[in-house]
Length: 322
Ligand SMILES: Cc1cc2nc3c(=O)[nH]c(=O)nc-3n(C[C@H](O)[C@H](O)[C@H](O)COP(=O)(O)OP(=O)(O)OC[C@H]3O[C@@H](n4cnc5c(N)ncnc54)[C@H](O)[C@@H]3O)c2cc1C
Image 1 (cartoon, rainbow, N blue to C red):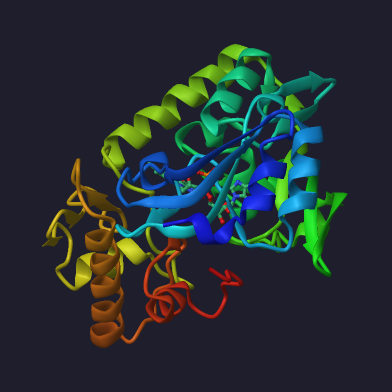
Image 2: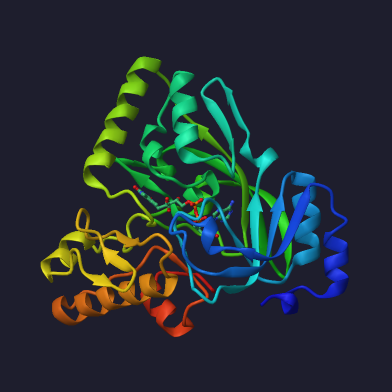
């Protein structure tokens, strides 16, 4: 796989950019929390804003997939024949000043929650149980425990892709149209950092809240290899309840299983198959639709699978072009 998406001239130019690492035929599935699935044509890691700017100037308008921590991403066993972009180093910075907090897009949500709590800055405790990054949280409007990204976000800095090229912009929360597990951050846009307006609180109180959330997650959600909830909840109901009601809790297909602890989680076995997970997601979606007349929509980004079934699983609300 792979040589076709990056021609030799571009390969040479990419090799010359400072703070940018390129690995061809790189592991992709292994970089997700599912830890299944194949490789990508190239994995490019940008470690500074200057490097990222140059990289995007060269790579546009080729499609890229921006990978955070891969906690909402499933990769097919045959892999994905495209360029995966990761952010590191300069994008992992946390800056705290007077309640306004600036977080790099590659900052891990659990690390942010704990660091802010230790500094007596409240609001982001809910993020401790979500194993993603700030960039992924903005794109998905991640949330839980009665809060979400939209509640605290002020602005995001991002490279917006339009008319064939990238432009660096500061966009307010309203300009990002954050809503239930969605935003208008496009699939080719790259979030680089975000500012959050948080509140000053007692550190001990925040740490207690974090411990409570971690305890709740341990009790109610499975560990192992998964991407959290597979389907967004339909209006006025819960996907887990619907899946359980048709008797699919604990259902196994090859190396994938509907969790017997939480029916909206699908687990992969160690050394398992991305295709098995996909087939099981498909089977659950089809059976819920057939038996209950409700069309569940997956929130997981599906990379390298049958495009028609992937589009169907993502539903009409998705603007994903992969
Ligand atoms: C155990 C577990 C529990 C979870 N619980 C929750 C929960 O309670 N609530 C919840 O909302 N989610 C939950 N999730 C899902 C997931 O963690 C979130 O959706 C998270 O926000 C994804 O972040 P990520 O960096 O891992 O994204 P990825 O999987 O890496 O990417 C997801 C999407 O975000 C885009 N993206 C990532 N980084 C950037 C960037 N810098 N710029 C532009 N786009 C970007 C990707 O292109 C992709 O479209 C859970 C997952 C797991 C494994």
